[in-house]
Amino acid sequence: MNSQTLFPTLAPTIEWRDDTLLLLDQTRLPHEIVVEHVTDAAAVWRAIHELRVRGAPAIGVAAAYGLCVAMQDARGLPVAGFRAELERRAAWLDTARPTAVNLSWSLRRMTRRARECNAQDSAALYDALVDEARRIHEEDIALCEGIGEHGMSLIAPGNGVLTHCNAGALATTGLGTATAPIYAAHRAGIAFSVFADETRPLLQGARLTAFELQQAGVDVTLIMDGAAASIMSQGLVDLVIVGTDRVAANGDFANKIGTLGLAIAARHYGIPFYVACPSSTLDFSSATGERIEIEERSGTEVTHLAGQRVAPENIKARNPAFDVTPHELVTGFITERGIVKAPFERSLKSLFAAEGNAA
Ligand code: MRU
Image 1 (cartoon, rainbow, N blue to C red):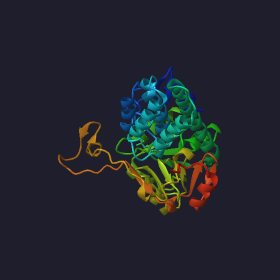
Image 2: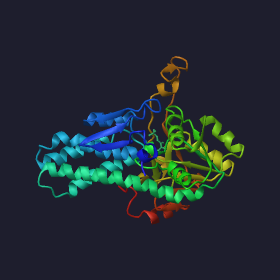
Image 3: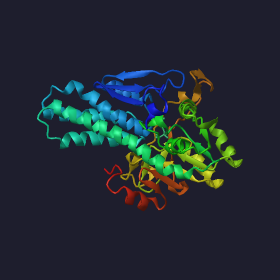
Image 4: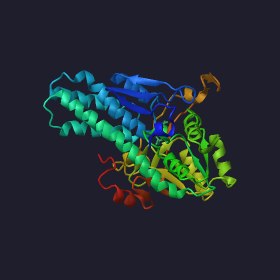
């Protein structure tokens, strides 16, 4: 099941049609449904950098197709020249955003496929790249399904589930990651409710999660980020499920700014705190979360609301887009192969020995 099955009136998050990459522009949701036709490398980089396509798994899929787009004008080159250009353009696309490991994971898979492909000419190499991008896309849909199947057991009738940012269908090409157990439980007829944090400053929770859950008929209530701990203190939350941009080998993980505060509050109130994590988001090359690069975005996202300045002129502002939550605060990771409990160093590796973005 993908976003189009869930929301028939919405365009798919990502589509590859007639050698063209189509992206649903997420900066325009929920008010407008605009599909961008991405036709060159610079446009791919900008779409990722400016969050028109966002969410770790969607970034990975968009980058894979995006690299195909970027290589279309190189099909006339000799094979060696094509391969050299591919490495160069992949390295450049990898600079579009730093935190979600899915970006470099997907680009590495694409360049490896080209290295291992015994093609006679660049056109055949290009076809192999498109084939690999399609695989990454199909796998992403399956990863979400797996997370849904395993995670739905956590949701009981009458539960309140809290989530942050958008780790939903819009952040992937399938059911989402944090939302996959929610959609699976909803599909199974379980009655429960969801609290969606608005997620300042770019409001992915309000614009995207509240939107997609509402469209799918899930009972969802939008709350301010600052209300989450208070809602927990009232006994309204039985379970927190968030997504992630990168999980280190020991289970420390990066996710949208505000996740760390939620994890601390959940621990204080004894609420289980789960992280939905497809294997494409595991980064075994980072031993801990200490070295995960955190994207720092423009301070104007903090000083302005909907284009209007709300803070004093010349005020200093910080805008880290992500934070790192230590593994001690995680109850479990919901993966496509099952729910993983501490010690994560061992449990994650034993389930994903061959994966994990190892360098
Ligand atoms: O800045 P964004 O909107 O790309 O941040 C997205 C998140 O933090 C998601 O929780 C994460 O990428 C997981 S998406 C399945």
